[in-house]
Image (cartoon, rainbow, N blue to C red; front, side, top):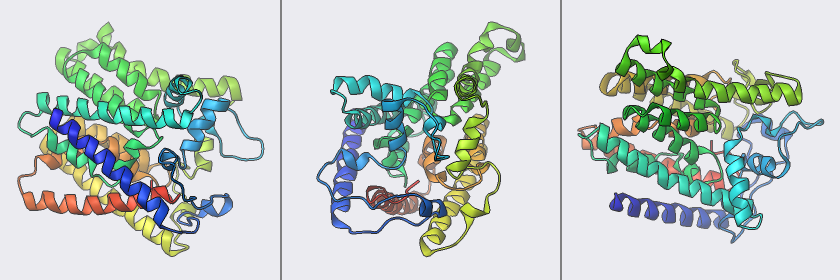
Length: 367
């Protein structure tokens, strides 16, 4: 474990130094990769020596908006913070008070802390339940994944990954109430947290059989649904619209029906972006097939649910970032016997990780 922690520290230093240099080296115009960007005032990133602020882009604004202003609807704009789940902003608010209201720093510290916790639980899960695999290797594949930089920015990715791994870990250990607790928190972090009911249901069924459905043992399975339903109910009470989440998500480019506007090829950046997202989708679907075949059906169904949620949102936007939580993919890669295939994946992944960091720090859409 000590060796992998050292490697994570080295990764953290390397990617942030690279991001810091990239931010202050380029002089770029505003991004035009999506049509909705044309209707918003999205300036290019300013050159800055503030290393904390380079982790502040895109959705970070909405999380900090919730911290400072709570949930509200804008009368003059369809975009709103009400689609962002509450746990991460709540943690930023709590930790931010320790740093005298510096919520930006609090968010970065939290994301970094949950990155290390994610690595620790990933190591434990692989070591205990996949003893045939070197537990350091899946972690390295995670850290070089093209969107891995999101694990250290002011987004929910590292928190959600930690809660996902914890839920699976304790479900495998048959500690279902504890797994349910992490699933509860996962559902309070991300819309896909509702799928954390799957490992609990799977392991309860494997342990006790179908009769457990009629016993209290099944209760933790419902924790994620309770949170998600509660969030929608909050919208109904405060904003008088139970389905507000889906309406506002549509304004963010996620209409949950095929939307030609978000697939239109109106510029070279848009074309390249669509190609990258399409490649991501094809690769993840191919990996999904082998996860079902080589690892387990539980892993496969969890990945399938997450991918289905992304693909039915009306756009391929963010498919790479949503894939970060699909930890079975990294276990599968670590189990490949052909080292040439592993090295090929590693080379390609590192190149796209560098591209993602360049895009992010320059205020370009990176996922």
